Image (cartoon, rainbow, N blue to C red; front, top):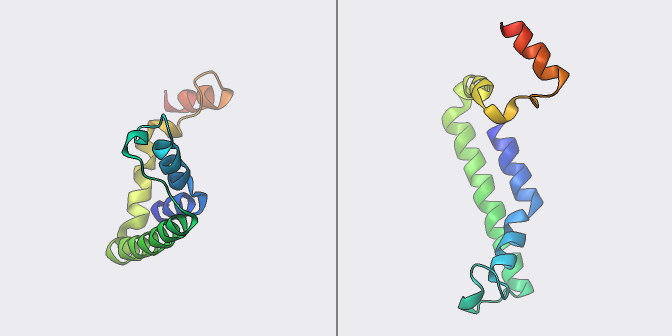
Length: 97
């Protein structure tokens, strides 16, 4: 699950869009005057690819035996709950009570 999220983040390139928006005039970092060339963007994407690949390998290597256990903690994620107004939420609460 963790490695799937890393892959999703890497493939979305959202971080690069966010960086460009921050560096543009009026962005959070617009005053520093940094611009990204196409070559800079390729370098950043390549670095990100290598970083995420190494991170995934290290996570899997270190925690391979207990990744299933970690995934069980997903039940404590409040973002995983259905919307309070949905019938799915009502059914879930009915089961718990």
